[in-house]
Image (cartoon, rainbow, N blue to C red; front, side, top):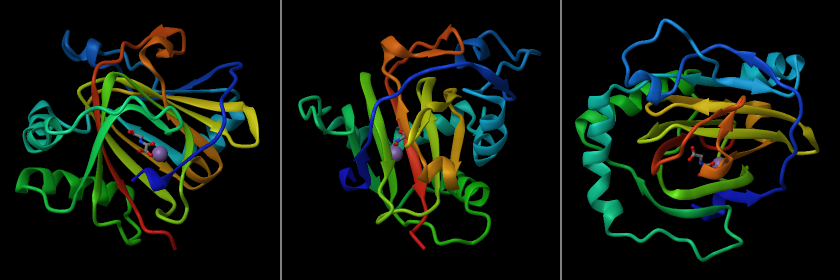
Length: 229
Ligand code: OGA
Ligand code: MN
């Protein structure tokens, strides 16, 4: 799956604009909150409207039971692998990963929900689902997924931890969006957000969303992609 990754460059930050969604798993622990915190901030209002419309974050997409079903299915295989820290040139640091084609009934049903949400227009979905387990100290450097191996849409579930995904315009690093990906949320990147912006998952020390610290724990993502056209 490393083939899918082409590392691009680092980022810069600027002003902030805000939108929609709801909160952190740390907030959810104290019961449902009437306040809906933001899940997306960007360098400008315009960017939020254009590229922001090609990005979705669905909070509480998974129930706690559904998250547990994924863990039950994935943990035995993941535990046999070691986290990789030593390849400094990799796009990902502190990770182990796998791909899975066949799933148990509970997970398959959830993945079908993801596919329906993300690939509704019937584009062909890549068979193997990518599972990426980031250590608490792990992170993903800015990159754009290879266009050779996947199409216009990337849809990912976040298990076990909140995190921040940063999108930065490939040829204009002052244009950026930060996405808050709460534990058990689904995110979808489409079109320009997928092709013209690098994406990255911030390391714990840098994990601050719109001024608010978002502690990173071990995080597993379950990612569905479509085939290139
Ligand atoms: C990747 C990637 C994001 C995530 O594996 O290419 O960008 O949510 N993963 O783990
Ligand atoms: Mn990627």
